[in-house]
Amino acid sequence: MSASTEKKVRQAAREAGTDKKSLAAQEEAKKKAQNQKRWTWALIGIAVLIVLVLVLNSSLLYTKTTAVTIDGRSFSPSEVTYNYANQYQTFVNNYGNYTSIFGLDTSYGLSGLSSQQSAFGEGTWRDYFLDQAVNAMKQNIALGKYAAENGIELTDEEKQEAADSFASLEETAKSYGYGSADKFIAANYGIGNNVKKVQAYALEQQLASKVYNQVAEETSDAVTLEEIKEQYPSVAVRHILVKAEAAEDGTYTDEAKEAAKAKAEEILAEWEAGDKTEESFAALAEEYSEDPGSSENGGLYDDVMQGQMVEEFDAFCFDENRQPGDTGIVYGESGSYAGYHVMYFVGEGDPADNETGRSNIAGAKMSEWLTSLTDGMDVSYKFFYRLAGKTA
Image (cartoon, rainbow, N blue to C red; front, side, top):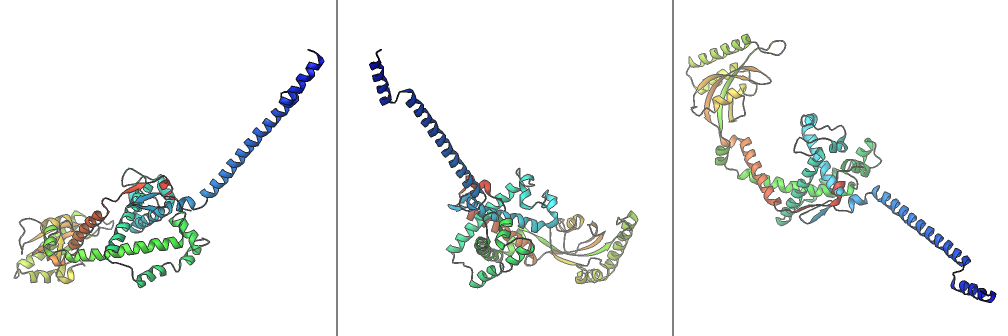
């Protein structure tokens, strides 16, 4: 190739950008662009991570997402957690030191529930209290609807009572070492909850309770004496308790029991030697009975339901052949005594006095009523339900 031709080729290569110098420059520019792109993506990733950390450490995920929808109403994880904490605290308050009987260790509070097997069902205590929370939320919605449909509202006085219950919360929070009432609420009722939100929840629950109590009172009043007599028959009976003398270790020897039995037989013989009336039996009960619950009223229990008394006492009362005026002596033993009961059967109890029977019947009707209100409610659990139960 002639010199002039080579010169023309080099000139053409430079113009086309395919000469060695141009190619090297292009390669260098390409590497710089790739590095810049990698740094850009890295910075974007860091920014996303920072945002994610900030979000996770804030209450946004707990207040601005949906954990569950009930009957078309959305509830955030913080709202579910409030009800979850309420269910746990109610259970602990009801059973106090006896929670251990159910295998519940309360020493770690809410944070320890996910690692403990529940005594009710196959899940953990966290699962149990979350289920209870959702059920309570269903009932609150149903009772709120019932209130709206029947014109039931909280009075100004009732609203003020609810507000007053929060008056000392700031002081309480500080006494437990929290910087504010909001921090105290978040620690005990879940991330994302604060005083303002809990006050709103409390008003909703107060209205639900007002509806329930109003209907419960009406239901109890509507229970008939016939219903009580049929479902919870009761008897009236008089008795004279003669206790056996306990040994120093709290046990009862056969000799002590025999002595109590002999005393009971003497008392019954004394009654039989008299005019053998209910009044004379009542007089002997006031003289001899060691039962502080009935000795001052002639030994009378006038609304005894089956299963209420110790086994032998119960068997005497509910013998199908028992007749008014029947007497007998039965052994009885409970945690506080061992001894003998001299019995006098008065007859059927007065249903009007059987408040336990009335309460049981009314309670069953209220349970059926609540079930009818909540039946058919659609419950849908969402992705962020897994955040429910978290406290600060």
